[in-house]
Amino acid sequence: MAEPLIEVIDLRKSFNSHPVLRGLSFSVDQGTRLVIMGGSGSGKTVCLRLIAGLIRPDSGQVRIFGRNIEHLSEEALLPVRRRMGYVFQGAALFDSLTVYDNVAFSLREHTGLGEHEIAERVRRDLSLVGLGIDVEPRLPSELSGGMRKRVGIARALAVDPQVMLFDEPTAGLDPTNARLVGDLIGELGRGVCDTAVIVTHDIELARTVGDRIAILVDGRFAATGSAAELLASREPAVQAFLAGEARS
Image (cartoon, rainbow, N blue to C red; front, side, top):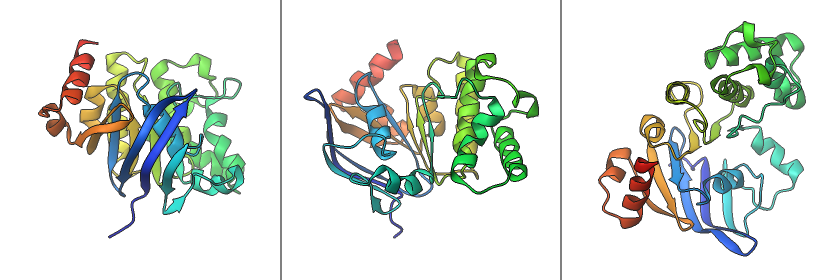
């Protein structure tokens, strides 16, 4: 059997002596989209940042593409990170750069492509997220929230990642834009990048894009399964989470 692209083993992380992850273990195979759900402060984003090597665990293992990354230096992490696309909650675009230069940034920094090839790649990735060349000269401040999210996704796609990591991709969006971003993530999984970890509190997004859904409670997964399986779960922690989200 093929090795998982992501494998997390007994992962533990605390902040200021407050445990956030308490022995979390899971794996993500090629072609799987795992949605991690949980309440505010449950450690969803912490988990994503550990996978990307942006923070280090207190203990446990993080294996990405078959390689343990928890003790790698920043320099040694670079080749691993280049194979992942990270979409931050607020898109994290560079305010002083145009849309074009935001998407081109990682190509200029991490590849030997010439400007003509970069231009082709930028236009390809903007097209994948439903944006045309008319947005290229615009600054992030001139974009709607939904457009900023899509530019953030285009920037993450620029390096042709094997895995996409999404942190609350629909947060702050109105229902129409949230649905558009959810549909986009679903489309990307069918031919562009089929392996992803999506952190969200959005139950509708989880239903739309998740092959597997896991609910994070008290630093561990209280349950994993399909949307239908979790909705039918009698696990008290799962029922409490779903009831709370339905009221919010």
